[in-house]
Amino acid sequence: MLSGKIAIVTGASRGIGRDVALTLAGYGATVIVNYCGSKEKAEQVVADIEAAGGTAKAYQGDVSKFDVAKDMMTSVKKEFGSIDILVNNAGITKDNLVLKMSEEEFDQVIEVNLKGTFNCMKHVSRIMLKQRAGHIINMSSVSGVMGNPGQINYCASKAGVIGMTKSLARELGSRGITVNAVAPGYIQTEMTEVLSEDVKESILNTVPLKRMGTTKDIAETVAFLASDKAAYITGQTISVDGGMGM
Ligand SMILES: NC(=O)c1ccc[n+]([C@@H]2O[C@H](COP(=O)([O-])OP(=O)(O)OC[C@H]3O[C@@H](n4cnc5c(N)ncnc54)[C@H](OP(=O)(O)O)[C@@H]3O)[C@@H](O)[C@H]2O)c1
Image (cartoon, rainbow, N blue to C red; front, top):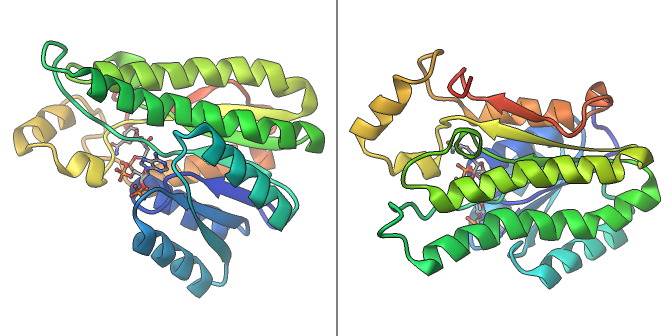
């Protein structure tokens, strides 16, 4: 489904990004496994892809840094010839109720989740515009759709991602480039592992499908949006949340 395609997945050393990288590679794409601090984990993702017969390369880079994102796009284009798929998955949380939230906690989440997505989209756009083709998939969240107490920073970043997705879809659509978002619900990763059992149970009570999502649930949706099967879908936010946000 993705043979010959070059894909960059940001934050692919762990969690959802890891499975997105493995899944895109499984469908035939060459995958750039971006990470920030988890070098060994990123190299393990590359090794797992190669063991399954795929092609991948790890790339360290903090997406919140404008020039780092630019260098990543430039060097991937130079080495591999094109960038067909960009998955903006890198994300962090710094949860706190508004009265306790520090300026740093607010700024850091916006820097990585919102500005990081902007940085990568901006620098890949020039490349995709010249190609007159490409698929961008941004990781939003059910929290960005519904809001969530204790996550005013995270919800702002993820609602912002939805707004940027729609704007860029309108800017790039005439050149055959699609821009979509995925809004995961409550997915089993290190990000959600830290929640207390009480919080986990109360979240599950709001999920009609009565289970946590898996990274595979998200990865398959991303792979669909990255393929020509989704050629006529753009500017959309696809909820993969067990019905939580309806
Ligand atoms: N898990 C959920 O329930 C859930 C729900 C809705 C949305 N999401 C979204 O889905 C995405 C992935 O979540 P996850 O649960 O898989 O998170 P995770 O397990 O905490 O993994 C986060 C990934 O982001 C990378 N990252 C963090 N800061 C970065 C930066 N500045 N530059 C580059 N990479 C960076 C990390 O790389 P290093 O380890 O190398 O630092 C890691 O690979 C996030 O955008 C998150 O907001 C998750």
